[in-house]
Image (cartoon, rainbow, N blue to C red; front, top):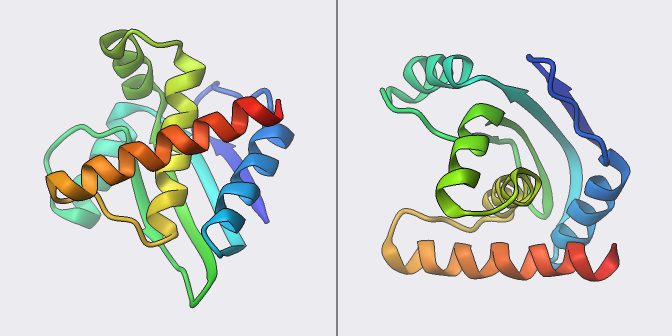
Length: 139
């Protein structure tokens, strides 16, 4: 089950399409989904979580809490829509495109992919790009 919640007035308009896409990406990596809960929030909300739970005092676009067991992925994914909007401007892409990248970034973490080293980061970016193409091919 995949659920979307918001701590702001943001609403994901294409939940069904995004849900189907997430399921296909997980399946491509040999995973099924037990439960993923997305929470869209503000920078302030996510900064507070980053400080309280991860001891990081920085703004971020996403925090993923991983509850995966074996090949059944699950977790809570918190996304700052303010940070996504700012990053979209910085990267010269549409907000929805950057949001999809961040949404799938969380799924890829749940699938076991990391982004701590330059090599891992490059692989993560390639996997994000591949997943974004899957969204566009199907829709």
